[in-house]
Image (tube, rainbow, N blue to C red; front, side, top):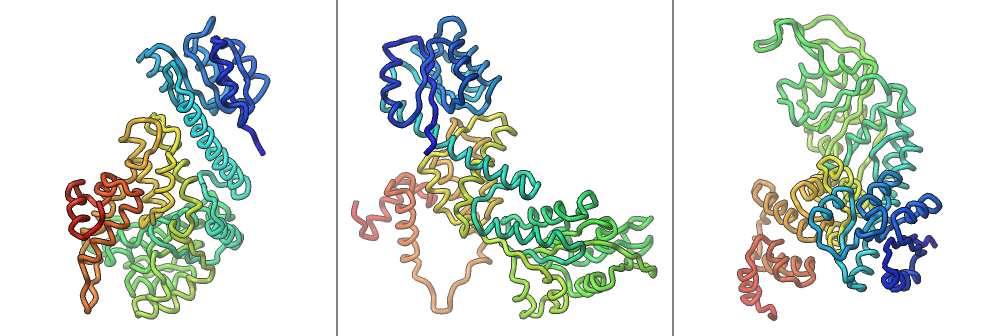
Length: 457
């Protein structure tokens, strides 16, 4: 089993000994009395974490930190000092220090901080291993996944990419990563280097979809460009056309799309000349397209033509092992984007991340982490950061009354309220204040309602 390596850099020999005794049982510990000695050790052996005193003979702690960062940006550093020097704290934190401790040290506290830092490092190394494996196998950057389900989706996509023109249907909830799979298929195919054109069929008026896909000749309709316009199929010639939310196109456009898939030829709107096109079509939907066929809203023959190869991406709630690696990946990405210094995710926050159902899937997780890194202070993502965002997301979803179905036999609203309160208390481990925030209530209001329903105080 791998043992992390810790380097203690402090010229106080009375402090070196107890620190080494605390950590030697769990970790391999080295000691240096100066910055120069510390740098010599780093050159000779790999170090995971450094406990670095600011006041050192020769090079001080800040100069030593700069030299460490110049050699290895991934080493975790915890600064120690007997002087509460605000400027030094700010300088150190900007260079990515994990934490900052003021002497005299609380040995229990420092043990907890070191353990948390190394747990964070282990998770980052696991993510990096996964990322390198995917880049090596798939030649694609920024894929972070640990679940068998997501790996299986990419394995299917890898096989599909070997066929030059096989149509593909990708199904999965909104925000699961359907376009990532589509781009991966294009990237791995012989069409890589040619155009990848993506259309969100929900975002385009049904009456305009036909001209958007097939283009139009000049003078075809009022409001069109005088010189006419090529469609997305023409623009994708030689490459890939990705039709997201394919279930939303009109029956008329469905018929023309089917004809294109069969003949590989298009007519522009208002045109009489056939134009031959070499395009691979990948379609995606957040619904079950077979059910749309049963409902009569989607052509059966087009469904069969699209569904030659089928890939399903499970929602994030069904692949919970992806949540923490993705959260850490997004945290690192937005640290770089916003110049922030979030280093870790607290254990309570990790627990909440994996318990949450993620109705918005990966897109929602990404947005949560982006908001926290941009707006919150500190260097750790905490449970209360997530509780606020989850409560806001819940309230937002409840405002859309068109999505709420009330059964004919009616509902027991009091019982529903009780269940939400119980669930909130379970989620927050009985913390009344946190449960109140999660429910969008004040603490006294929640306490009153609990008493009203007979819950013990």
